[in-house]
Amino acid sequence: MIDIRLQRLPHGEGLPLPAYATEHAAGLDVVAAVDVTLAPGARHAVATGFAIAIPHGYEMQVRPRSGLALKHGITCLNTPGTIDSDYRGEVKVILANLGAEPFEVKRGERIAQLVPAAVQQARFHEVDALDDTARGAGGFGSTGR
Ligand SMILES: O=c1ccn([C@H]2C[C@H](O)[C@@H](COP(=O)(O)OP(=O)(O)OP(=O)(O)O)O2)c(=O)[nH]1
Ligand SMILES: [Mg+2]
Image (cartoon, rainbow, N blue to C red; front, side, top):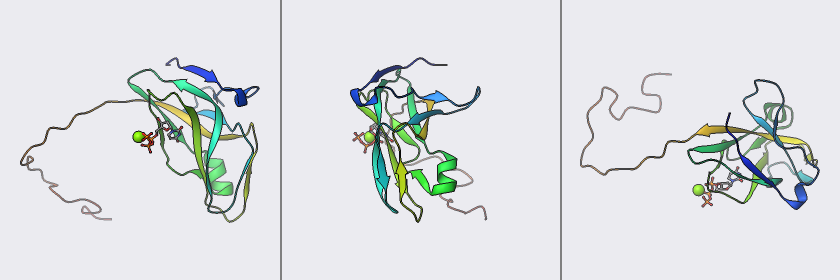
């Protein structure tokens, strides 16, 4: 369990904080702070009404909810979205409507889930050649279907 400071923004007043729906859920469900209608094929950065300060060494992933995806074709366009630990702006959920019908997001409705994850930063060291491996440059189906 990690502890994360959350700042509620004025338009987030009265909304529930991100919360686990069940005891051992992986994702904290997050609700929309605004009403918005997504036409088929449309996308929108939906406000959540809060900002967070994630501890260094962690990120917050923004993932779709499977029920919205299956029933309505609603997904997070950039899934998994990345909230950096140094980001202090409002958390937004980039919803996209891949369905055939307009979809109405209502304020207070759960639209996505937040999954904290440990982050390992890396640095690159440019070299002239890489070590050989059995795979070599094979990829993208090279081992068969
Ligand atoms: O679903 C998302 C994805 C990103 N963000 C915010 C937090 C994140 O730290 C910041 C930048 O996201 P990202 O690095 O994915 O986008 P970018 O296009 O690279 O923007 P930037 O140049 O600001 O890093 O935008 C969200 O609120 N929701
Ligand atoms: Mg970025």
